[in-house]
Image 1 (cartoon, rainbow, N blue to C red):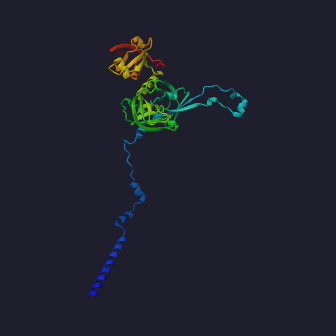
Image 2: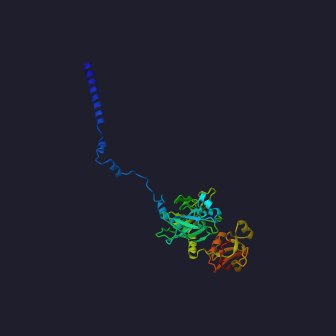
Image 3: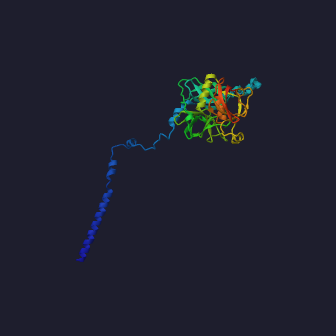
Amino acid sequence: MRRLWLLFAQTVTVVLALYFVYTAVGRREQPAPVRVQQMGSTEHPAAMLEAAPAKQPPVSAGGSYRAAAARAMPAVVNIITSKKPKRGKHPLLRDPFFKKFFGDRDEDSDDESSLGSGVIVSGQGYILTNNHVVEAADEIEVVLADGRKAAAKLVGTDPETDLAVVKITLEKLPVIVLGQAEQAQVGDVVLAIGNPFGVGQTVTMGIISALGRNNLHINHFENFIQTDAAINFGNSGGALVDASGNLLGINSAIYSQTGGSVGIGFAIPVSTAKSVMEAIIKSGHVVRGWIGVESQEITPELAASFGLQRQSGAIIAGVVRNGPADKGGIKPGDILLSVDGKPVADTNSMLNLIAQLAPGGKAKMTVLRKNRETTLDVTVGKRPSNAK
């Protein structure tokens, strides 16, 4: 009996084991319901890819400046200048024997060319650029961003701010929008647009590093916007624009010991460029006020020696004999405090305030003399071209 029970138990165990094996194998051979449904879809795989394109990183409105660049770039031009060498033809160039072996050689064909940039600021064809881009040029050619070319005429220059105006005659010119440089702040994003090294129109990005930079001894009148946007050879005369594509300044110079950009570039504010441009268009040159004085900064040492309670103003170190200041009563040793009610912070401020005065008119000058303030009426003269 016991043997029969063991045989029965073993038989049941084997049957159950076979059943479990059969069930497991049968389920493994059955395809999953979801997989069957997908593979049996009537949609073409290509159609499925088009209906569900791959996800791409979103472009933030504040992370791209393509709208600003697209707005400003058409108005930034490439300026090509040429200067013919000033020398006479060598007698051998006219000798028939020389021509037989060496052919016709024209010395005038060896023009010296240079590249720069400019900004179209008027639909009438006026273009702002740097004076050093076009000075002494015999021919000026302007190449627009759309590929059009035109010969340019020099309207006028202002070496003291390193600005110049040229004019072209073409229809449907793109014009840049003038911004407000006086509202710009350190840290604002700016774009520099120009044609560096002649490679073609290029946009670089940076921020405003400083405002009101002067005493750099680059120009006589200095009020530069400093930026770390890359500015290189060929960018001179190009545009410095804000994040909306409005013109903030004309790229003018860089500080570099290698000739390439090291992140210290300077642009002339659009406010200065606009006033210079209007004067050049009106009369061909810029007329500035002048009173005939030499000035000196007030240092802490000088303030202590003069017993001054302030360090603002400009010390009059010298007066031109029979000049406007001399005739108006200004004397060496006076400290100029204000010009027509506007305070004088330093010598650079004094120079700019006087330059803005209209020649022939009278201006009130407040000076400190022997610790007493005195107001004098000075008839403003016209600034000579060689004035310091």
